[in-house]
Length: 279
Image (cartoon, rainbow, N blue to C red; front, side, top):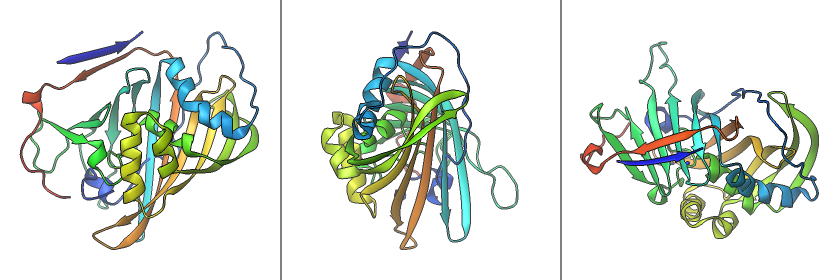
């Protein structure tokens, strides 16, 4: 068992991710504490390019995610909550799938572990025993795991901003009581893949091939230390089964920087090796 502590579209989509995506308006938590050195907003492009590095310098945080997808007249939202270690690229999220149309719970909460190049899921369903994990190589996913798990990896979402070229400073506002600077622009999956870290770069390169469009509109809200407090991406991919374009809005809220993170990666004997039923 590996223990790390800090004092990290296609048929593989989990359950509802075959028809939906994450965050639509999760609310973050305010936090107190001594303020770090304020970073001048300067050039908007440079500000969003630096965002991933500022998260790594912050070390860790708590996170709330939400993914929303609308297709065939149906709108589905998936929500998640957890912690992330930006230095070791390890995170843990508890992902809540939506109710089915009858109002019944669609699935037990899924536990997801985010690790360099891999996504682990427990309570995956689809024929996977309840005590087993499913491991997915994110570079093999046609969306690079930007939407597959029902939550976008927080650091991957930040590194995607490295591909932005045209960014506008919208103005000052607040997120959960924290003063932030709002930036709006478009980033490019192919460009971001070339300048991101090796693990994220491979996943973004896969997404650039799998998505119907490589340009990704975003809204980024950075605090005065340059750290992301809220980030919203709009992805577009083709549903191979229905041959239609699906829009997914993924939102990530980050707060409580410096929060303790403990992620235990499963042993090989605890990883399911059988066939997973398609949703």
